[in-house]
Image 1: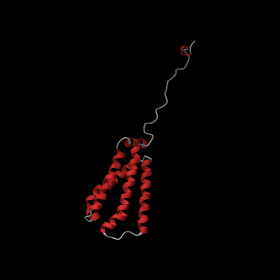
Image 2: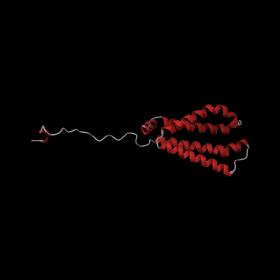
Image 3: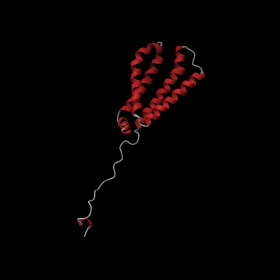
Length: 152
């Protein structure tokens, strides 16, 4: 008598191991977006500490003020990067809101910030384009799916 012929044998359920989740690993575009944000923040720091004072003709900030400003920028950038790399959706949304507010305020700040300097305007536009590309990477697939998986 074969084991399958015994009517008293309990039923057998053929269950396969569950498939590993498709997006457990961070997509490459999330890392790329974070690197782009680092580049954008570096450009902003250089612009604030070096380029802007030279073009406008003001004296550069003191070494202490430059070190403090750069240190704060680096710490905030590390914090933002870490939250994004951990898949915190709220940080992604916070960046989008900050970018949108910056776009809304841009026309009001243009004259005050640039004093007619084409160089500063170009740096500002390049920085904005880098930030926009970074946000696009964070909000398109597979990045957007990865953030959804992390928040659920």
